[in-house]
Image 1 (tube, helix red, strand yellow):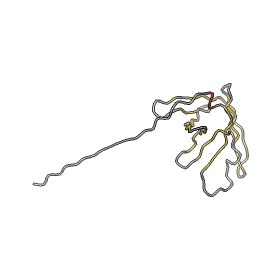
Image 2: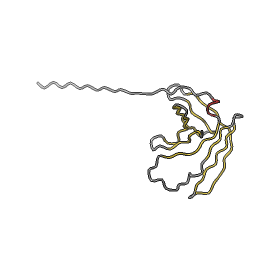
Image 3: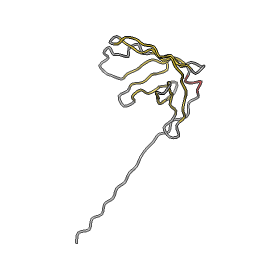
Image 4: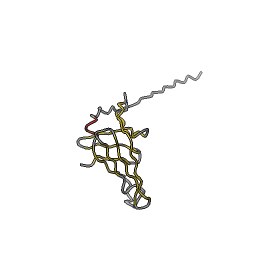
Length: 118
């Protein structure tokens, strides 16, 4: 008689981001990409401003795409496990704060975000 035993272990790891004060998010952000090619893109001129009155101003465009401006309302949502998210109207950008740097993640998998200008 052949006896088989199976064992399955599932483990997860979640890092909890600390909450970020609303005042710390106010300011100017620029688009950053970790694309190693360094070529001109549709986002070369992207610039985001989060204002103290809850309004935002987002300019998008680049050398390969005409500029357009979007103005609206921004808020912050504190997530239970995944940290804070900045909402520009209905678009959400997870916040990652590290040292003196604040990033609003567009696509963390490929290294694209808005970073607060210093």
